[in-house]
Every structure is written in C-alpha cells, then in structure tokens.
Amino acid sequence: MPIAQGVEDVQFAYVLNINAPAIASGSPPPSSPPGNGPDVPSAGGVNSGNWVIGDYFTGTGATATGTQEQPDPTLANMPQYSTALTDPLRYNTTAANIRGVRITVNLRSLQTDQTQIASWTGDTEKRVENLNGSALQAGGRLRRFSFSTSVACRDMESRSAFIF
Image (cartoon, rainbow, N blue to C red; front, top):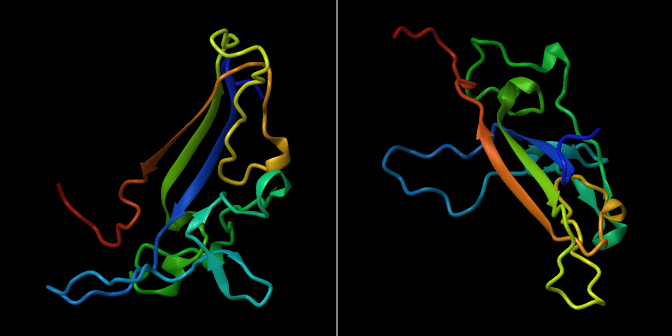
C-alpha cells in the first residue's frame, strides 16, 4: 500500500511492560537485565522473547525469515483496572501491557546518486523489525535511509482513581 513517495517499508513493534526485578528503596539498580519476555515462546513454553512484539526473525543475512507476532486478544488474559502491578497478567502479550510503539521507516532517495562511480548499484535497505531478509530492496543507484522512533503510551499503568 503506497504511503508516500520514497517510502519503501514501514514497520511497527509493540514494547511490552517489562517484568523488571524489584529493587529495595535506596538500593543500586541490578547489574543484570530483566528476564526473557513473553513474546516468541519456545516450543517448550519457556519465554525466550525480548519484550518487543513484532520484531522477531530467525536466521542471518538474506536467509533470515520474519515471524508474525501479534498482541494476545484473549480477554481472559488481560489485566483488569484493579489487577496488582506484580500480578503475572501484567507481564503477558495482551494489548493492555503495551507500554510503547516503535515505528521504523525505510526511505529511498527520489533521484539516483550521480556522485557515485558508474559501477555503484545503490544502497541496500536495512532489515528492521520482522522484515524478511530476502525481501530487502536494493539497486537502482538510489540512496536508502532507515529511521526509527519510539512513542510511549501514556497512563497505561493506571490502577486507581485520581483527581486533578
């Protein structure tokens, strides 16, 4: 679906609520990162993900294949307004646990780069999120650029009434 001239790809990934370890007041932050996320569970059911839905791929280089990840739409898995912060329902892949959206856009120049030598074929599109490595755009003596930003979802951790 065309978005704008020069846009070759747009990818969205959803950043989940990270199950970070509890830290006592006044204690230094832990030296190790939070445990594995609930996205992309392995065959054995152990969570092996990285807390970002929509960015998983396997393999390397042009042989990499993307895997479609989606938030879990099951109502029974969604935390309720009164669900405690430490409840396991706050750390699964439901839409209620999304804390941010990462947007990545791959762009290309509208004109060929005439400053390069004649044998230069152009930049290769960067693989982002779950984009399949074999589907990358290349050639045409065009310059390519990848831009990524994250947008936080406000008030997603609200668990009680508040007054302004």
